[in-house]
Amino acid sequence: MSMNMSRAEKLASRLAGNMKESLGVRLIASEPQAAVAAPGGIPSASPEEGRTRDRLAGHMEIDRIAPDPDQPRKYFSEESIAQLSASLQRTGQLQPIRVRWSEEHGKWIIISGERRYRAALLAGLRTVSCAFTDRPLTESEIRQESLIENLLREDLRPIEAANGYRQIMDLNGWTMQQVAEALNVSKGAVSKALSLLRLPEDVQEQVEQGVISPSSGYEVSRLKDERAQRELAARIVGEGLKRDDAGAAVGKAARPKAKKERAAGVVEAGPTTTRTFAVADARLTITWSRRSVEARDVVLVLEEALAQLRGRGVESDAA
Image 1: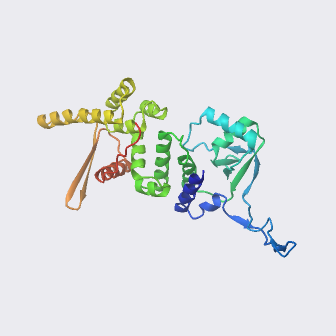
Image 2: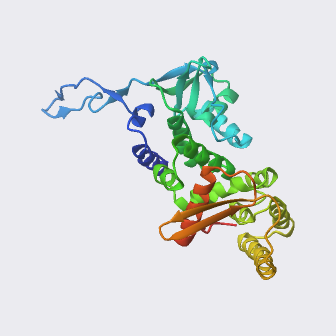
Image 3: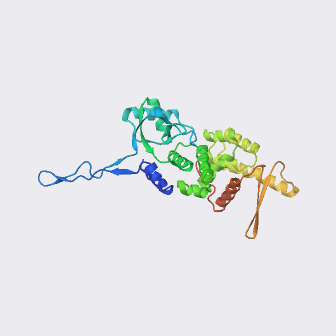
């Protein structure tokens, strides 16, 4: 727990200057108490010495609280919720839920702590302990705070993390490097997560459910066409291929095709989009096997290429 708190504080310091207030850190100090001499002349300590009170903390009726419909995390383990519910009934709520007021919904919307909220509902609690945010938050701040807590949890699913990174990039106009620095994760981890969003939805679901590991999913995403991606995904599941096996299959699929096309002067059929950039004394051309390409697609490709050149684009993890 101490590691998580330390990391959360580090992350908070990297974000907006007012984020500490939204985390409930703006405290009201108690009035200083004069030390009273105990019998024998030994000063005794007051229970109020060094104590602070948080004016943003309190309890709220649970039916006046609602989950954030736009938060990236969608999956919650029923078993984990049941265990936490039993703990709430046995020992009470040890950590508050962070909430913000929404005029649109007429309720307090959860910034972080939806798992605790679900467990409290299951436990039949009428009120829950909350840390209230009493200032307006930008959409970017809301997503950042939600993602921070989720990233501190080991059970955040890979596609959920990727969607969270993408949301923050779109809201702020950030690059992968900026996201990595703000959230205290490696750029390679962000790059690899975002690559999973290039997979067909059915393959993404296999990664999300743990049928295909994120590292193997990354290898599949390197294939250009969806049919090839699905075929390799089917092999990973059916033949039990590991990440290195998947990577070798990707390389094997690409090399003969490229060699044959170079020899015959063949251009790949199907819809493509090409962008050419004049950079210094060089020309850079990028081709996609699809018609629609946005500015963020260009940025993503360039950043992935740079990460690979620096040897950080592909990080090993358990297959």
